Image (cartoon, rainbow, N blue to C red; front, top):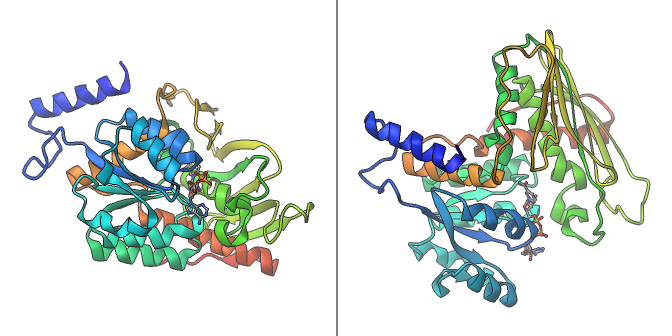
Length: 366
Ligand code: NAD
């Protein structure tokens, strides 16, 4: 049975039992929410637009782009209405567009906070790409804007909806292999575009740490099912002509109150994509851990652990459908602003540890 059939069956069963989850008073059960993608770069083009074609609870209703050629092409490719196509000068006019329920911010990191807050002020639900902001204080402002607007906010953490990552989190949370002891979570790829905003300290906010480290932090803390309370960190740059104002490779160790530790390498100058956690009675490895595509989940001591089959389709479909359902059913968002803030609090502490060369405490709070 494919995912779509399985969703239909689940919905059908729910109806039969009188358990259909949608709020039928306000929304019709087959209503699909309209999404506007903001920033038509590589991720929006290669992943989000294709993922929306398969979505059950949302669809691509509009776009925001500063490039006239892109607007013209997307209009034809996705059969968009003229009135749902915006440039940045007219972004705030989204407020009066009834076709757009959700605004999805897919811009460079330094633009996330501003556009998320403006979209919330325009009365829209928002998905904001990772990392949530440039630092924890920006994330706190975004959460305050969400609360003021009464709308929902999701961070583009697609792996919060991926079955193998969910299983790994559950193994840690339920202590199915005993107490968490240590983890190694790493992600790196070779950056082929020296002038890309990801290489710019102002727009990217810190190279591979901001771009990739966020996945490593999540994998570690979710497999640990515990938040780290302190960190040590190191960072290196060898090619000073290429890496200006950012490091090439970041390494950090998160220390957990239970006595466990996790170690991470994230880099723009190597290839690795793995998350491994060790427990008292076994271990779990996810590989590839963060890139899309089929997951390899290996466990030792795994007789009682049933590994889900590889998912068909794009992870982003599940992520966006889950958010649409959160809105339609008025349920809590799993990849919430608070989750984004938690990662940024940890990243801020890693940056402090790189500077100080000492163990830095991680202090959480809104
Ligand atoms: P990209 O450079 O391909 O796209 C960025 C888009 O922003 C471009 O269309 C660009 O024209 C537009 N833009 C608007 N104003 C800009 C400005 N002032 N400067 C530069 N660009 C401007 O980048 P991308 O890879 O699509 O990444 C976009 C966001 O999506 C980032 O925050 C990134 O972290 C996130 N992302 C997430 C995932 C994931 O798996 N969740 C994967 C890739 C990217």
